Image (cartoon, rainbow, N blue to C red):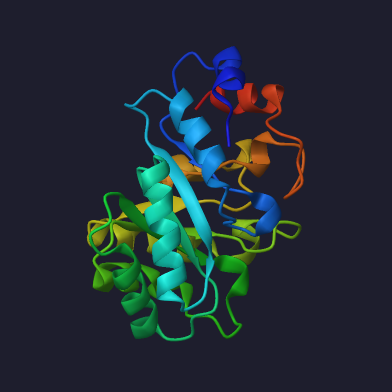
Length: 223
């Protein structure tokens, strides 16, 4: 999460999206509601706020409650990770039930480093999102101390994911250990959103906060 004060010190323009999560409680750990409200109060209304609600298993009531609380606290975008799903139909039903009638964009997240385990195939995520009737999907990594996104997926598969999202008129997002050296291929693929949390912080899940020099280097990167 980028603090607006820190961002003002290095950004000539405001952020496109302010993303809020608690990395200490999981890849998409849900932050405290009070924190969401405090951050939303400091962000201009024209800037969307994205909130993570956890690494999900099939508990509709729990994650529906989390999604509703996030929206009431000011979330414009809600993200949920599909962590313990092995069946695409089950995953789509879960996403549809959690997102139905929610006054926010809803994004499903798949974990590239869980490929080959019992999880659903990550390249099926765009179809799952379309079947659920949600707005988009994202590739990320579950474990933050190992290789990033490109260490777990071939570039051709990342490209297939972005293109499939585009074909299905879904928003696409990429994250997971991305840094300034990834900007070249990201510019070519043109996902809707690219996340650089670890690339502008000092660690994995226990980083002290945004490193201003890293953030400035990313923002001022000559494309």
